[in-house]
Length: 143
Image 1 (cartoon, rainbow, N blue to C red):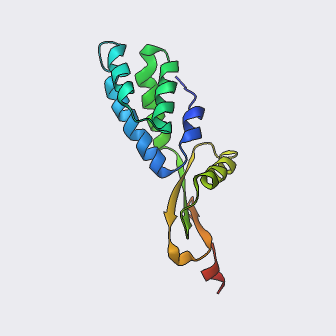
Image 2: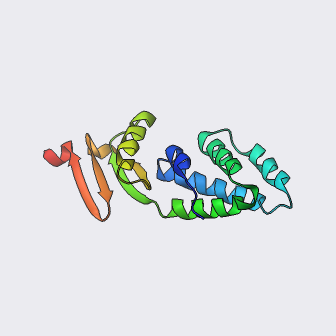
């Protein structure tokens, strides 16, 4: 069965977000082996109060009860198969800027996450590595 993970991808932007999501998936997957829905609801109530966890729980609740494990299994596979673009900058980027970058990239590439790295030696500009290609546009590069 093909599930729609669009809402999940709206809150998962970075490699770190993907790793957190995978941990939550494993936790909730185990809870769905309970004899009834109480096991899942008990675990869902213990999830952290942060966007990725809240979104995941809300999306699972939309799925018919007997398909929760399938949903989580397919989501896990989908997250693991995301393309990763590595972006290295001189400073930590603000969350809103990361959001703008991922929004633009996802217009063409739906399953894409950013692996962010900070390197103060860059001084200005950025380095990008994706699909075996490498681009460097930094001030150091121009000196």
